[in-house]
Image (cartoon, rainbow, N blue to C red; front, top):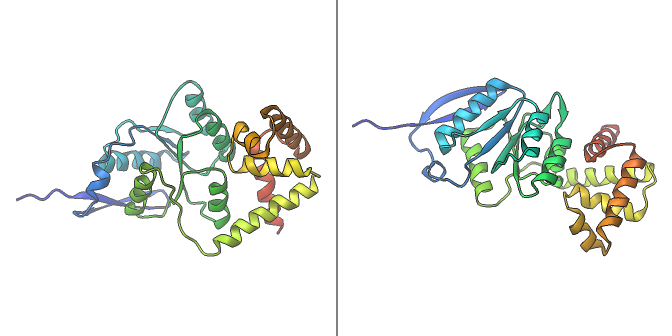
Length: 246
């Protein structure tokens, strides 16, 4: 009798190690909820390995890979779709937070799983705030990666637990407060900025704050002008600098 073994994979610093485990979760392998995956990562060898993992374990053969975020963004602007985007948080040619913002505008309900070595508590907390579906460290085991996919398929979020999570959230909130004071944002602008950082849309913000969508747009333009940026990614960059200053 020949036993069929499903491979498990340990991902470590962009190297893919294959071992064999006869106890691979059948629940994941039989799932057909995710049909189209877009991988955005500037390390081609890693992306190829990840596509292989997706095909073997989930039966996903149509995974697309983009080595630059702008190419992936153009794909979505031209009508391309995906059930899931797997995104490296730091890619050389484009700010990933800018990519996140623009993709969320084009496809508000799209699932985005950050798969990155940049695993600081701050980055994880910030991804949560920006509406990312999940965060997986690249030095994880396959079972954890597949668990993240399962959680996404069930409409849940997947983030690793870490110490001082509450402290990281408070640190972000304090950084927002300091830069708002530094750039002299009004109370209304601060409220609206906080809503945008939560990835809420114009209509949602307008309804929650009892404003018109046009008023929300005007406030957003004024916020960008005061910060001297063109998008939310610029504001995120200011937040990171403020955090580094302490």
